[in-house]
Image 1 (spheres, rainbow, N blue to C red):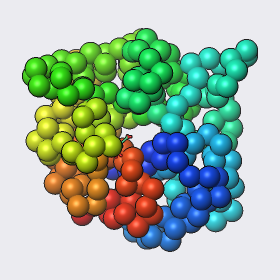
Image 2 (cartoon, protein in one colour):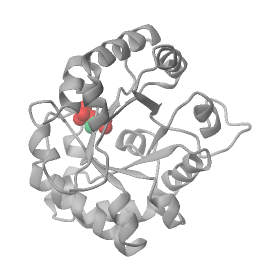
Image 3 (cartoon, helix red, strand yellow):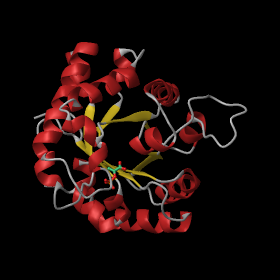
Length: 256
Ligand code: PEP
């Protein structure tokens, strides 16, 4: 057994209006019992424009559901048109911020140095970074998936103290499994989660390796989550498409 609390995070991506966001969080809260939320931490990651509405609902109904952002600026404040800072997110009650999602890496050319700056910007404002790493299909076919993913881990965590690293959530998301319906096998997820934990032990110490939660992400559904969650080093999931359906996401959160 482990002291790590399972985490299920719903990445809504660029979907829903703020009104639909409120309805989805209400439904989600209705679908989850106090018992569920005691066992598992449930978090939603709405678009920036919906976070204020989610905050209002969560506060008013005292919901035991967390929320965070899908991205953040590496900068603190200033002339960065269109960007959103960690301070602004923290002020809205966010507790998490994703850094380095593969869609940001692919469509916005985010490299490990930028992702590292975003991880640091999140930590600066007491947001727990959800650092996303994972290999594209070609890299897996060449058998270099572990090496590739661990290099992204090293890059993303560069310069962090052990104390900071212990608060990071690492999401292993193989690019070929995101939004494709092709889920990694429980063996694939465990192999990488264990490799990530081993590397954390080398970069820091056994305590950090034991504390960090490692999520799996990529076409997670209620029908495939159970055997993945049964693996020793997998502590939760980053869920895209399936998190837009309250009942389905609640079933994923209740994976047992
Ligand atoms: C994601 O975007 O983080 C993700 C895992 O998406 P999906 O669940 O839709 O594959």
